[in-house]
Image (cartoon, rainbow, N blue to C red):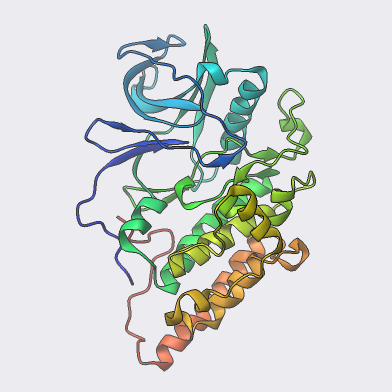
Amino acid sequence: MADLRPKTAPTVTLTGDAREATDDRPARRVDDRVGVAPGEQVGLPTGHRLADRYVIRRPIGVGGFGTVYEAEDTRLTKPVAVKVLNRSAATRHQIGRFHREAIAASQIGHPGIINVTDFGQDDDTNFMVMELLEGAELSELCERRGTLPPLEALEIVRDIAEAVGAAHREQILHRDLKPSNVFVTGSRRLKVIDFGIAKILADHLEVDGMTFEGQVMGTAEYMAPEQARGDADLDARVDVYALGVILFELVTGERPFSADSVAALMEAHRLAPTPLASERAPELAGAAAIDGLCARALAKDRDERFEGMQAFVRAIDEARASLRQGERRDGHAGRRRVTPARVALL
Protein backbone atom coordinates (compact mmCIF):
# COMPACT_ATOMS: atom_id res chain seq x y z
CA MET A 1 0.00 0.00 0.00
CA ALA A 2 1.37 3.38 -0.96
CA ASP A 3 1.98 5.75 1.91
CA LEU A 4 0.56 9.20 1.20
CA ARG A 5 2.08 10.54 4.38
CA PRO A 6 3.75 13.83 3.39
CA LYS A 7 7.40 14.24 4.30
CA THR A 8 6.53 17.34 6.35
CA ALA A 9 2.84 17.36 7.07
CA PRO A 10 1.32 20.78 7.64
CA THR A 11 -1.82 20.91 9.69
CA VAL A 12 -4.56 22.30 7.52
CA THR A 13 -7.86 23.63 8.76
CA LEU A 14 -10.54 23.46 6.14
CA THR A 15 -14.25 23.85 5.79
CA GLY A 16 -16.30 24.25 2.66
CA ASP A 17 -14.35 26.26 0.10
CA ALA A 18 -11.42 27.64 2.10
CA ARG A 19 -8.16 26.31 3.46
CA GLU A 20 -5.08 27.48 5.33
CA ALA A 21 -1.74 26.08 6.52
CA THR A 22 -0.56 26.62 10.08
CA ASP A 23 1.79 29.47 9.27
CA ASP A 24 -1.23 31.79 9.88
CA ARG A 25 -1.20 33.05 6.31
CA PRO A 26 -4.63 32.35 4.81
CA ALA A 27 -4.26 30.82 1.36
CA ARG A 28 -6.68 32.23 -1.17
CA ARG A 29 -8.15 29.50 -3.31
CA VAL A 30 -9.17 30.55 -6.79
CA ASP A 31 -12.65 29.15 -7.29
CA ASP A 32 -12.53 27.02 -10.43
CA ARG A 33 -16.24 26.39 -10.75
CA VAL A 34 -18.30 27.44 -13.74
CA GLY A 35 -20.93 30.00 -12.75
CA VAL A 36 -19.16 31.17 -9.60
CA ALA A 37 -17.74 34.66 -9.10
CA PRO A 38 -15.86 35.78 -5.99
CA GLY A 39 -17.22 38.68 -4.00
CA GLU A 40 -15.97 41.31 -1.58
CA GLN A 41 -14.62 39.74 1.60
CA VAL A 42 -16.29 40.28 4.93
CA GLY A 43 -13.58 41.13 7.45
CA LEU A 44 -14.55 40.16 10.99
CA PRO A 45 -12.08 41.14 13.72
CA THR A 46 -10.88 38.79 16.43
CA GLY A 47 -13.37 38.80 19.27
CA HIS A 48 -16.33 39.73 17.08
CA ARG A 49 -19.49 37.96 18.28
CA LEU A 50 -22.01 36.58 15.80
CA ALA A 51 -25.60 35.90 16.85
CA ASP A 52 -24.53 36.45 20.47
CA ARG A 53 -22.98 32.99 20.38
CA TYR A 54 -19.97 32.57 18.07
CA VAL A 55 -16.77 34.46 18.91
CA ILE A 56 -14.40 34.92 15.97
CA ARG A 57 -10.82 33.74 16.65
CA ARG A 58 -9.00 33.99 13.31
CA PRO A 59 -9.56 33.71 9.56
CA ILE A 60 -8.65 30.33 8.12
CA GLY A 61 -9.22 30.95 4.44
CA VAL A 62 -11.09 32.58 1.61
CA GLY A 63 -13.18 30.99 -1.12
CA GLY A 64 -15.29 32.11 -4.03
CA PHE A 65 -18.40 32.73 -1.94
CA GLY A 66 -17.10 33.56 1.52
CA THR A 67 -14.50 33.80 4.22
CA VAL A 68 -14.11 31.04 6.79
CA TYR A 69 -13.11 31.69 10.39
CA GLU A 70 -12.18 29.58 13.33
CA ALA A 71 -14.56 30.58 16.12
CA GLU A 72 -15.68 29.56 19.59
CA ASP A 73 -19.21 28.33 20.20
CA THR A 74 -19.79 29.94 23.60
CA ARG A 75 -22.85 27.82 24.37
CA LEU A 76 -21.18 24.48 23.73
CA THR A 77 -17.67 25.77 24.58
CA LYS A 78 -16.02 24.17 21.58
CA PRO A 79 -14.21 25.40 18.46
CA VAL A 80 -16.20 25.60 15.24
CA ALA A 81 -15.76 26.92 11.73
CA VAL A 82 -17.93 29.84 10.63
CA LYS A 83 -18.34 30.55 6.93
CA VAL A 84 -19.42 34.12 6.17
CA LEU A 85 -20.93 35.06 2.82
CA ASN A 86 -19.05 37.78 0.96
CA ARG A 87 -21.02 41.04 0.97
CA SER A 88 -21.03 41.55 -2.78
CA ALA A 89 -22.29 37.98 -3.15
CA ALA A 90 -25.16 38.57 -0.73
CA THR A 91 -27.87 38.85 -3.36
CA ARG A 92 -31.20 37.15 -2.76
CA HIS A 93 -30.11 34.37 -5.11
CA GLN A 94 -26.73 33.86 -3.44
CA ILE A 95 -28.20 33.97 0.06
CA GLY A 96 -30.64 31.31 -1.07
CA ARG A 97 -27.76 29.21 -2.41
CA PHE A 98 -25.89 29.69 0.86
CA HIS A 99 -28.98 28.54 2.74
CA ARG A 100 -29.26 25.60 0.34
CA GLU A 101 -25.71 24.52 1.20
CA ALA A 102 -26.50 24.61 4.92
CA ILE A 103 -29.70 22.61 4.49
CA ALA A 104 -28.10 20.07 2.17
CA ALA A 105 -25.14 19.26 4.42
CA SER A 106 -27.17 19.26 7.64
CA GLN A 107 -29.88 16.94 6.29
CA ILE A 108 -27.57 14.06 5.39
CA GLY A 109 -26.28 12.99 8.79
CA HIS A 110 -23.44 10.77 7.56
CA PRO A 111 -19.95 10.64 9.13
CA GLY A 112 -18.43 11.08 5.67
CA ILE A 113 -20.22 14.42 5.12
CA ILE A 114 -19.17 17.67 6.79
CA ASN A 115 -21.56 18.51 9.62
CA VAL A 116 -23.35 21.89 9.45
CA THR A 117 -24.83 22.90 12.80
CA ASP A 118 -26.26 26.39 12.32
CA PHE A 119 -27.14 29.05 9.77
CA GLY A 120 -28.32 32.60 10.22
CA GLN A 121 -28.01 36.32 9.66
CA ASP A 122 -26.59 38.84 12.11
CA ASP A 123 -27.28 42.38 10.87
CA ASP A 124 -26.00 42.18 7.27
CA THR A 125 -23.72 39.18 7.89
CA ASN A 126 -24.92 35.82 6.56
CA PHE A 127 -23.13 32.93 8.23
CA MET A 128 -23.00 29.15 8.41
CA VAL A 129 -21.50 27.14 11.28
CA MET A 130 -19.70 23.85 10.62
CA GLU A 131 -17.51 21.36 12.39
CA LEU A 132 -13.86 22.41 12.42
CA LEU A 133 -11.77 19.91 10.46
CA GLU A 134 -8.04 19.32 10.83
CA GLY A 135 -6.14 17.59 8.06
CA ALA A 136 -5.72 18.21 4.34
CA GLU A 137 -7.56 18.04 1.06
CA LEU A 138 -7.27 14.84 -0.93
CA SER A 139 -6.00 16.93 -3.84
CA GLU A 140 -3.08 18.30 -1.81
CA LEU A 141 -2.03 14.89 -0.57
CA CYS A 142 -2.22 13.30 -4.00
CA GLU A 143 -0.16 16.12 -5.49
CA ARG A 144 2.58 15.24 -3.02
CA ARG A 145 2.42 11.50 -3.57
CA GLY A 146 1.40 11.12 -7.21
CA THR A 147 -0.56 8.11 -8.41
CA LEU A 148 -2.01 5.56 -6.01
CA PRO A 149 -2.00 1.76 -6.19
CA PRO A 150 -5.36 0.52 -7.49
CA LEU A 151 -6.49 -1.04 -4.21
CA GLU A 152 -5.82 2.11 -2.25
CA ALA A 153 -7.54 4.28 -4.84
CA LEU A 154 -10.57 2.00 -4.74
CA GLU A 155 -10.73 2.26 -0.95
CA ILE A 156 -10.82 6.04 -1.17
CA VAL A 157 -13.42 6.11 -3.93
CA ARG A 158 -15.55 3.59 -2.06
CA ASP A 159 -15.62 5.81 1.03
CA ILE A 160 -16.62 8.81 -1.08
CA ALA A 161 -19.32 6.78 -2.81
CA GLU A 162 -20.75 5.66 0.52
CA ALA A 163 -20.94 9.26 1.78
CA VAL A 164 -22.40 10.70 -1.41
CA GLY A 165 -24.82 7.79 -1.59
CA ALA A 166 -26.17 8.94 1.77
CA ALA A 167 -26.75 12.39 0.25
CA HIS A 168 -28.57 10.81 -2.68
CA ARG A 169 -30.87 8.96 -0.31
CA GLU A 170 -31.86 12.38 1.03
CA GLN A 171 -32.54 13.51 -2.56
CA ILE A 172 -29.43 15.72 -2.65
CA LEU A 173 -26.97 15.80 -5.55
CA HIS A 174 -23.53 17.24 -4.80
CA ARG A 175 -22.76 18.30 -8.40
CA ASP A 176 -19.20 19.40 -7.61
CA LEU A 177 -17.30 16.29 -6.55
CA LYS A 178 -13.53 16.67 -6.96
CA PRO A 179 -10.43 15.92 -4.84
CA SER A 180 -10.39 19.45 -3.39
CA ASN A 181 -13.90 18.81 -2.05
CA VAL A 182 -12.81 15.67 -0.24
CA PHE A 183 -11.07 16.27 3.07
CA VAL A 184 -8.84 13.84 4.94
CA THR A 185 -9.01 14.43 8.68
CA GLY A 186 -6.27 13.91 11.23
CA SER A 187 -7.92 10.62 12.21
CA ARG A 188 -7.64 9.55 8.56
CA ARG A 189 -11.33 9.72 7.79
CA LEU A 190 -12.65 11.10 4.53
CA LYS A 191 -15.16 13.96 4.57
CA VAL A 192 -17.06 15.25 1.55
CA ILE A 193 -17.38 19.03 1.80
CA ASP A 194 -18.78 22.07 -0.03
CA PHE A 195 -22.42 21.59 -0.98
CA GLY A 196 -22.51 25.13 -2.35
CA ILE A 197 -24.07 24.12 -5.68
CA ALA A 198 -25.92 21.03 -4.50
CA LYS A 199 -29.21 20.26 -6.20
CA ILE A 200 -31.97 19.37 -3.77
CA LEU A 201 -34.57 17.18 -5.43
CA ALA A 202 -36.97 16.78 -2.51
CA ASP A 203 -39.78 19.34 -2.57
CA HIS A 204 -39.79 19.75 1.21
CA LEU A 205 -36.15 20.88 1.13
CA GLU A 206 -36.53 23.56 -1.52
CA VAL A 207 -35.24 27.01 -0.55
CA ASP A 208 -37.49 29.90 -1.52
CA GLY A 209 -38.35 28.37 -4.89
CA MET A 210 -34.74 28.44 -6.07
CA THR A 211 -33.89 26.68 -9.31
CA PHE A 212 -30.76 26.20 -11.38
CA GLU A 213 -32.49 24.95 -14.54
CA GLY A 214 -30.67 25.97 -17.71
CA GLN A 215 -27.54 26.99 -15.80
CA VAL A 216 -24.24 25.18 -16.18
CA MET A 217 -22.67 24.92 -12.75
CA GLY A 218 -19.80 22.82 -11.45
CA THR A 219 -16.10 22.27 -12.15
CA ALA A 220 -15.43 21.61 -15.83
CA GLU A 221 -12.78 18.92 -15.27
CA TYR A 222 -15.30 16.73 -13.41
CA MET A 223 -18.51 17.66 -15.21
CA ALA A 224 -20.80 14.99 -16.63
CA PRO A 225 -21.91 15.52 -20.25
CA GLU A 226 -25.52 16.26 -19.29
CA GLN A 227 -24.33 18.72 -16.64
CA ALA A 228 -22.10 20.43 -19.22
CA ARG A 229 -25.11 20.77 -21.53
CA GLY A 230 -27.11 22.49 -18.80
CA ASP A 231 -29.76 19.76 -18.70
CA ALA A 232 -32.44 20.31 -16.07
CA ASP A 233 -33.19 16.67 -15.22
CA LEU A 234 -29.93 15.82 -13.48
CA ASP A 235 -29.80 12.79 -11.21
CA ALA A 236 -27.34 10.76 -9.13
CA ARG A 237 -25.37 9.79 -12.21
CA VAL A 238 -23.75 13.24 -12.45
CA ASP A 239 -21.99 12.45 -9.17
CA VAL A 240 -21.17 8.93 -10.41
CA TYR A 241 -19.43 10.51 -13.40
CA ALA A 242 -17.44 12.95 -11.26
CA LEU A 243 -16.35 10.12 -8.98
CA GLY A 244 -15.24 8.20 -12.06
CA VAL A 245 -13.01 11.15 -12.97
CA ILE A 246 -11.59 11.11 -9.44
CA LEU A 247 -10.81 7.38 -9.67
CA PHE A 248 -9.17 7.90 -13.06
CA GLU A 249 -7.08 10.73 -11.62
CA LEU A 250 -6.02 8.78 -8.53
CA VAL A 251 -4.68 5.82 -10.51
CA THR A 252 -3.18 7.69 -13.48
CA GLY A 253 -2.16 11.05 -12.01
CA GLU A 254 -4.17 12.94 -14.62
CA ARG A 255 -7.76 13.58 -15.60
CA PRO A 256 -9.29 11.88 -18.64
CA PHE A 257 -9.79 15.15 -20.52
CA SER A 258 -7.87 18.42 -20.79
CA ALA A 259 -8.32 21.47 -23.01
CA ASP A 260 -7.24 25.08 -23.41
CA SER A 261 -10.60 26.52 -22.41
CA VAL A 262 -13.57 25.68 -20.23
CA ALA A 263 -15.82 25.47 -23.29
CA ALA A 264 -13.47 23.05 -25.05
CA LEU A 265 -13.16 20.96 -21.89
CA MET A 266 -16.92 20.66 -21.50
CA GLU A 267 -17.17 19.72 -25.17
CA ALA A 268 -14.59 16.96 -24.57
CA HIS A 269 -16.71 15.54 -21.77
CA ARG A 270 -19.69 15.53 -24.12
CA LEU A 271 -18.07 14.25 -27.31
CA ALA A 272 -14.46 13.03 -27.01
CA PRO A 273 -13.78 9.29 -26.68
CA THR A 274 -13.05 8.35 -23.09
CA PRO A 275 -9.51 6.95 -22.71
CA LEU A 276 -8.76 3.79 -20.78
CA ALA A 277 -6.91 4.35 -17.52
CA SER A 278 -4.33 1.77 -18.63
CA GLU A 279 -3.60 3.88 -21.73
CA ARG A 280 -2.47 6.72 -19.47
CA ALA A 281 -0.74 4.50 -16.89
CA PRO A 282 0.89 1.42 -18.45
CA GLU A 283 1.41 -0.10 -15.00
CA LEU A 284 -2.36 -0.66 -14.94
CA ALA A 285 -2.18 -2.98 -17.95
CA GLY A 286 -2.99 -5.98 -15.77
CA ALA A 287 -5.76 -4.22 -13.85
CA ALA A 288 -8.71 -4.69 -16.20
CA ALA A 289 -11.07 -4.12 -13.27
CA ILE A 290 -9.92 -0.50 -13.03
CA ASP A 291 -10.45 0.08 -16.74
CA GLY A 292 -13.92 -1.41 -16.45
CA LEU A 293 -14.92 0.74 -13.49
CA CYS A 294 -13.68 3.96 -15.06
CA ALA A 295 -15.22 3.19 -18.44
CA ARG A 296 -18.65 2.55 -16.99
CA ALA A 297 -18.62 5.49 -14.56
CA LEU A 298 -17.47 7.81 -17.37
CA ALA A 299 -19.94 6.65 -20.01
CA LYS A 300 -21.25 9.54 -22.13
CA ASP A 301 -24.76 8.12 -21.97
CA ARG A 302 -25.84 8.20 -18.34
CA ASP A 303 -28.01 5.13 -18.91
CA GLU A 304 -24.77 3.18 -19.41
CA ARG A 305 -23.27 4.33 -16.09
CA PHE A 306 -23.83 2.84 -12.66
CA GLU A 307 -27.38 3.80 -11.76
CA GLY A 308 -26.27 5.11 -8.38
CA MET A 309 -23.61 4.99 -5.71
CA GLN A 310 -24.83 1.69 -4.28
CA ALA A 311 -24.22 -0.01 -7.62
CA PHE A 312 -20.84 1.74 -7.87
CA VAL A 313 -19.87 0.43 -4.42
CA ARG A 314 -20.83 -3.13 -5.40
CA ALA A 315 -18.70 -2.88 -8.53
CA ILE A 316 -15.79 -1.49 -6.49
CA ASP A 317 -16.01 -4.45 -4.13
CA GLU A 318 -15.96 -6.84 -7.08
CA ALA A 319 -12.95 -5.02 -8.53
CA ARG A 320 -11.11 -5.19 -5.20
CA ALA A 321 -11.73 -8.92 -4.99
CA SER A 322 -10.45 -9.36 -8.54
CA LEU A 323 -7.32 -7.32 -7.87
CA ARG A 324 -6.57 -9.20 -4.66
CA GLN A 325 -6.98 -12.48 -6.46
CA GLY A 326 -4.49 -11.26 -9.03
CA GLU A 327 -2.06 -10.30 -6.28
CA ARG A 328 -2.33 -13.75 -4.76
CA ARG A 329 -1.59 -15.29 -8.14
CA ASP A 330 1.47 -13.07 -8.37
CA GLY A 331 2.68 -14.16 -4.96
CA HIS A 332 1.77 -11.00 -3.03
CA ALA A 333 -0.76 -12.52 -0.68
CA GLY A 334 1.07 -11.22 2.38
CA ARG A 335 0.46 -7.60 1.55
CA ARG A 336 -1.35 -5.78 4.38
CA ARG A 337 -4.98 -4.97 3.64
CA VAL A 338 -6.31 -1.43 3.75
CA THR A 339 -8.74 -0.93 6.63
CA PRO A 340 -12.03 0.52 5.35
CA ALA A 341 -12.33 4.28 5.94
CA ARG A 342 -8.86 4.31 7.50
CA VAL A 343 -6.71 4.90 4.46
CA ALA A 344 -3.21 6.01 5.48
CA LEU A 345 -3.27 9.42 3.85
CA LEU A 346 -1.63 11.47 6.58
